[in-house]
Image (tube, rainbow, N blue to C red; front, side, top):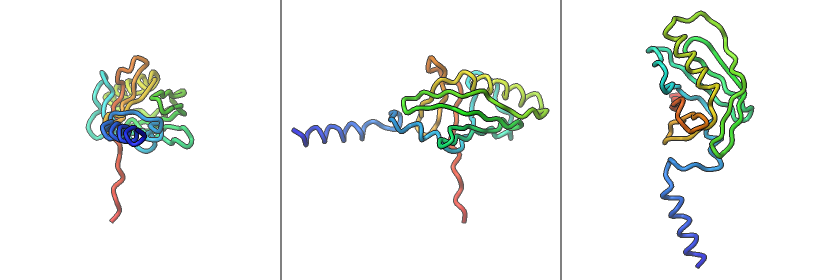
Length: 144
């Protein structure tokens, strides 16, 4: 009987796939992410390369919109809950296309209530689990 339960548990883990959430998911936030989309907002102009970085040890986030730098503290748990403190930003005069998407990025960060992983993509969501931001991991290139 015990062998059967262990076998069923292993099958469940094997079939869970990348979309399943676990209590360790908050640690997956750590590192650098490319902001691919502000859902429903304007597209980032080519060459702006917006990024966000999460430091899980300090529970701090920082990034760049492609013009201004920004940052905040945050709170996250392994159940998909995520919230940011006040977003602080530099105030460099940026071209209008970047300012428009930057404003929508900051607006979205202000209402983030959760996160999910869709494969390797990080999706930040609102309180109704609707997607707000889509981020891809930035993989460091190996030296050599």
